[in-house]
Each structure stands twice: as structure tokens, then as C-alpha cells.
Image (cartoon, rainbow, N blue to C red; front, side):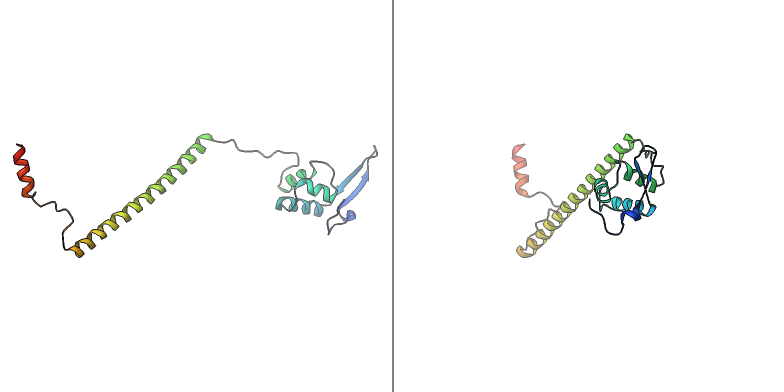
Length: 152
């Protein structure tokens, strides 16, 4: 098995014999903290750490991680119950914010387009010397009046 630099087996574990004859290993706190930090930082996953450092037991590292987080090793972390009404409201709020942003962008584009047309009309009026803008106070032309009279 590979051994990681920095810790020799004598520094990291102590062995004791129990009555049945199995060896029980006791790991130093420094060694446990080093393993926990490597796993939590993402340098190693739990299984890699077990193989590299020769740690037996599938839940040993998980137990150490829970101890380092202030839990007893066998306690489960309580997960809050999902509040679906709040989640749905958050999703609805995000959709409304997105729609609002899209509408603001469309309004900005429409205003730019209107300014462009206004500027184009002003340039055409200056260049050709004619009034293009509609004047609301102007009377209808006589041609239109004659057509209206014929229809009656």
C-alpha cells in the first residue's frame, strides 16, 4: 500500500490486542484531522484516503468528519423539511424578475428605434426641405374635401 509523506505508521496509529485476538487501531488526533482536512478540501475522496493511509472500516473517516463538525460520530445531520410553498414563490419571483428584465430590454430597444426614426425624419426634412411630420392642427387638403362631397 502507498504511504503518504509526512506520517509514518508509528506516528499515526497505535495497536492494541483485545481478548478475541483482533487488532484494534487507535489513530492520533493529528492524523485524524489531517485525513478529515484532505477529504473535506477535495484532495482525496473517502475511499482514496482509506487506501493510501491503510484505514480499515468503511465508516471510520465519515465518523471522524462528523466528530470534527461537532457532532457525535453516530448522529445524523438533521435536514430541514422543504417548504414547497416558499420554493414555489421563489421560483415565481425569479420568473417575474427575468420577465421584467426582458421587457425592460425590449422597451430600451423600442425607444432606440423610435429615436432613430425621429432622427431620420429630421435629416430628411433638412435635406429635402419638406415637412414630413404630421401636423395635427392642419386642415384636410381640398382634394379630400372634394372627394368627401362627391360621396354624399
